[in-house]
Length: 315
Image (cartoon, rainbow, N blue to C red; front, side):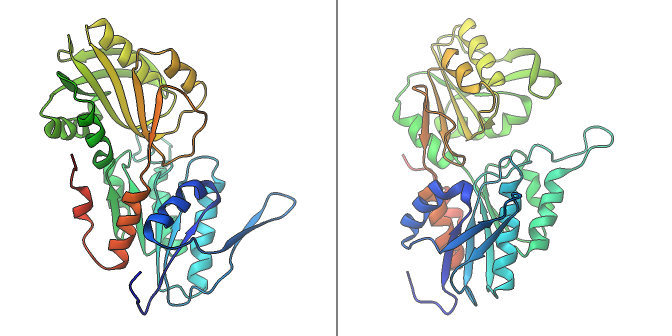
C-alpha cells in the first residue's frame, strides 16, 4: 500500500471474520489484531492490541441478530476513538434493523434511525454498507455513507447464463426501482409481484403484473429472510408459464426453515452475496463474494478517490 501519514488498518468483528479476512487479502494487508474478552455473565470487551493512533481505521462487521453483533461494533468504534484513531469507518456489509425505517403504526420505534445515531455517537466518521433495505436510511446519518450495489456482481453472472428470453421481476411494489435498474442493463422486460401482507413474514395474497409465459425470470431483491415471498412468487410464475425462475438476493438472512422452502421450491437457483455467514449449504444456493468490491471501496476511501467507478457493470 502507498505510504501515508495516516496508515490504514482493518479490523474485524467476530461475526464477519470469514469475510473480513478475504477483504483484507484483496486490500493487500493482514487484519489488525483485536481480542474480545468475555466475562462469565456474557459481558464482552473488545481490545485493540496494536496502536491505531493517527490511523484510518476500518472496522468490518455485519449486524444481524443477535444484537451483540451491533453492540460489538459500537464498542470497537469507541475503543478506536479513545485510542486516538484519525478516521473511523464502520464497514457494515449487512445493516441490521434496516426494515424498521419508518413509523408505520402507532408506538413503534424507527430503529434504523436510532442505530444511525448510535454509530455516530460511538465515534464513526463514515459508514460503508451494501443494498440497504430502504436507501433513504442514508439520510438518517449526518456523516458520509457509501452505499455499494450488488448489481455489479449479479448482472455479469446473469449475462453469463446466456438465456434467450430473460425478464426481471420485482417481488413487490417497493422493489420495482431495483428491478427496473437490472432490466435496463439486461435489455429485458419488467414484471411485478403485487403482494399483500396481513402481518410480518406472512403473505395473504399475491398477483402478477406482466407476462412471464415462456420466459426466464430473474427475481431481484435486497434480502431473503423466511423465503416465503420468493418461493411463492416462483411457484406463481411457473404456473403462469415461466420457463425458469432464479432469485438474486443480496443478503441471505434465511431464518427458520427458509432453506427447506428453497430446496422444495420451483426456483432453479438462489444467488446471494456473502454479506452474512452461511446458515447451511444447499445445492440450490450459489454464494458470490463481495470481498473484492469492498476492498476496492476501502482503498478508494483511504486514498480520497471516487468510488463511483466501482459501480460500472462488467460483462
